Image 1 (cartoon, rainbow, N blue to C red):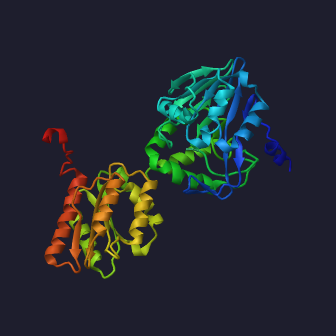
Image 2 (cartoon, rainbow, N blue to C red):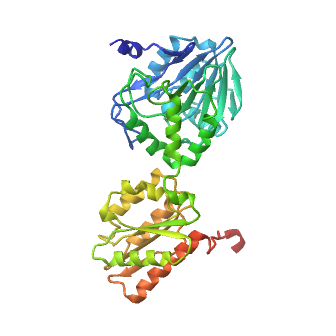
Image 3 (cartoon, rainbow, N blue to C red):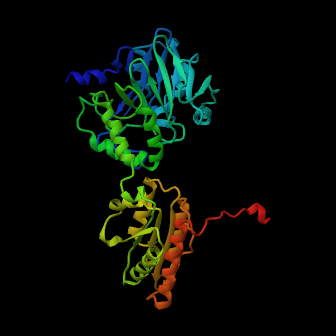
Length: 425
Ligand code: FEO
């Protein structure tokens, strides 16, 4: 196939007049960063932009693919022509070839976000290189290449603090780093030529961008205002066919999905598992207690009825999360841990957490869940409740009070106060 010759030949691929893809393909990769599945590998996209008075390299590739990157780069530019190196994101899959590129093009000025400066120094530390001449840039800053202008967009936390986008004004090309990317390897490169990659696009968003959806919405404010001819992410297909559709899809994915979020009421979701019905009784009493507080909407779910994955939307959009587990073999039960581990894929900033459970003779689960919630940076404003075996009427009242207190913290009726340790000294 002709398309195989294009990228297998280690030559650059022109994506617009004077703009080339000089990235690398990694078709054998099956897991990225240990956690992400990559069914057909991935790509590390890097680019060269040629102007009348300068040549810019935008991003590099993972270190063990540096030979491919340099071979493609050399097919369209000499090292002494490179005036600018733009770093949209410094994670090693995009900066692995950077130290060597800096050795080969020491005259180039590096442009990066202010948050990336310390990362750049850390990255160069093992080789002992001095940091190159670099310029921190932000939204609106530009670099002139002669007849071509690179303009920067400050788009942090997508998905690292350092991330930014770079817009080639005259051509309407947007280089986005990981944003709009996906782990999908196809040497035909362009979205109108590769196979169906929708599942990869959605999976990548869910795994990488979803926890930062507020930052996604901020970035979209900048991106939607641009004339877009092509979006060039750092992984996966280059989006030249209907690029704005991918922008729209990001907005859909990042917008709140549950109507509650647009309303003034707070939401509490109570999850539980129960071996003998005791933890279930506690869950019901906690939910009933919370419902007594005006302005709080309560949902109650038995995790025996579903996988953690189906609750992700609830978890993401709830204001408070309570977890009930019996203690079995000195531990909380697995579905609770599965659900807690899914919290790392959503934005949990500002949520409140609580734990409860019935136990037979040791009862460690509640403390373990609380520790995990705190470790995930949820605030745990109400002490967890452990009840030995069957809750009696008084203990169910305690559960009700826990629900009420949690709900009052959610509405702000009970104010959160940080202890000022210095003042106590
Ligand atoms: Fe593709 Fe965040 O590195």
